[in-house]
Length: 127
Image 1 (cartoon, one colour):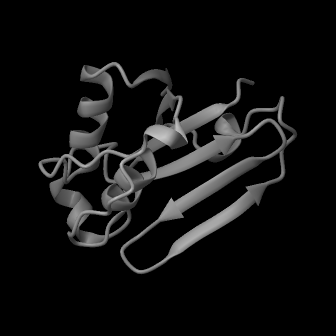
Image 2 (cartoon, helix red, strand yellow; image 1 turned 60 degrees about the vertical axis):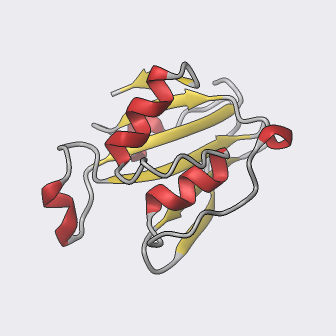
């Protein structure tokens, strides 16, 4: 499995997600750094961070993220915009911060997905 950053779009489990596009209610990040798979799961109230029990050449996607839309990206830490924009704390805001995207009009997971694909920042890896 390639090293890289994977953005996982899935259904959400809070009340507001019923107003969002199906399959785009929540976002999480999975990173393969060549040594470990790291799962970053931001929410409105906390941030979960875990090292996943997979070898670098394994894939966690069939076990943990079945049915999700997965976008593979290459994130250059030197080119990130490190200024965190003010806004409601959400998975979208946290992922935008991690990726260095500061566009204010991106407020839903589907907005972020369209921005990534339309600007050729990533490619769909699986669904």
